[in-house]
Image (cartoon, rainbow, N blue to C red; front, side):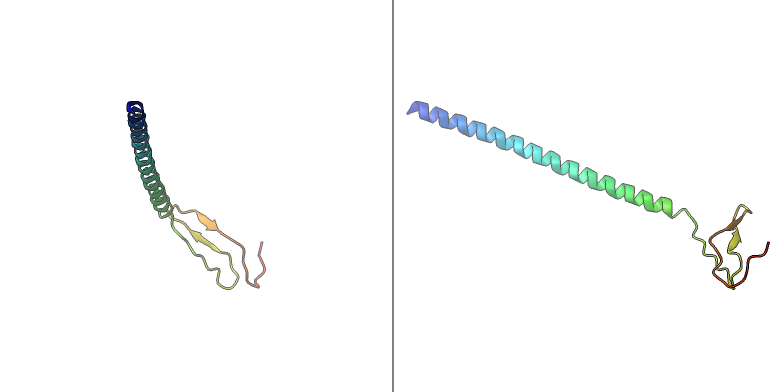
Length: 90
């Protein structure tokens, strides 16, 4: 009878120990998940911020002329092809 009581106490001790370790593991996993979500949000915000640094330029070539503009640095930038009926002059 005393031996049965001792085995039962050992089983309860082992179960409580395993429960404690399980709680610690779950807590660590939740902390990791929160950190990863914060890092994902941070990289997304950084990406959006970097892309917002670029200027968007829309150039209309009008009646089939060249689609170009003079940028802030003074260079002439040509983009795309003409979709008009005007033939290209050389």
